View 1 (cartoon, rainbow, N blue to C red):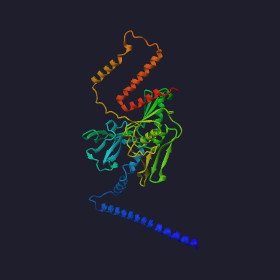
View 2 (view 1 turned 180 degrees about the vertical axis):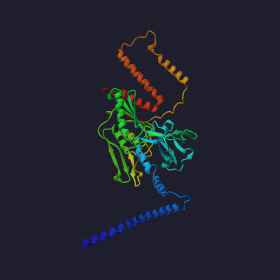
View 3 (view 1 turned 90 degrees about the vertical axis):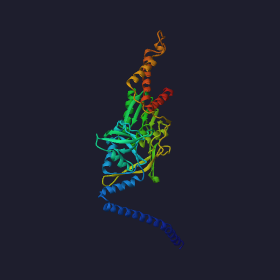
View 4 (view 1 turned 30 degrees about the vertical axis):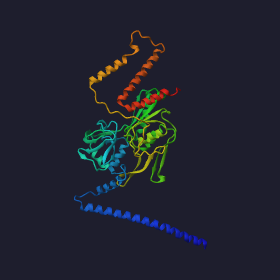
Length: 446
């Protein structure tokens, strides 16, 4: 009897607790169905009474996209043709202007121009706002609609109106659309430093990075002759998470690279480094600016948190959210924000970005000089270089160095002067190279 009484009491208690919960769930379901009925009513009214006949599929597509874009700037609906374009872009070739854009205050904002593209050649900069296309305002359009306005046949002209910080008036820029072929990685040698610039994170990025490092080391006569590596992520708008993880792992032996956290506790993932460093622990500088976003910020944040690299430049863009592309019926897809990125120390990148260890601003480009001015400066510089002890008549010779040692010293001096010229071309990169040169000078000799 006691057991039976306990069972009955338990049933009563369960009923008393579950009853209100079931009622709440039923009320929520009823509310959702009522809202869907309302949507259906509006849809039918538009179809039957709007002043012009409308295409049903366009209405549905607009409703879906409106629902997604109301969530955040990066969630959207991808019609079949846009889904195909996105898949092509990750492979590194597509048609367009060559800019990565987002939306802010109702206008299209340039995240970054891509190297070697029509937008880059036309002088478009990270942070520019595009307000009009061919004289037509973009205010109030969704991001996808704005991007569609900027698309067009290869070889055709587009005139965009740009608002730029520091400029008092908007100005027009003419750009000729072209096929964008992205070279994900470019490398060069500056002095004893290997510089690898990553322009995007697509299927070619990691292989391009590895090839660039190997090429630079070979040019300097082996990895032991390299004093360090500059990883240039400026104006890199991001791309594939898998590539960001591989690039970070290339310079880390162990530890977390990045983690993602979604809505539910079990939705998170952690990605860890595997043993092996492509440059054997050589010093590193990572260059970032306001155009460095998403995957670029993952790499910069991981190398910064592990104290593997010195981060130099300006604060990054601050896109720390994860978008999952979900294929849908009808060959389209949905791009939905499903998580946030966190650096190894637990920092969220979202809206804050990665702050550099050393803030270095890039000076504005100098105005073009006349040929006469350039020649005069060159002559003055040559004259200044010629005034030294070695040019005096009857000078004593240096008896502490052999001829080979003198030649080596002259070669090193020539490389240093060549590197110094970089300051006029790219001050931030020159600063990064100087950091590695300084670290090399005080490093203990093997």
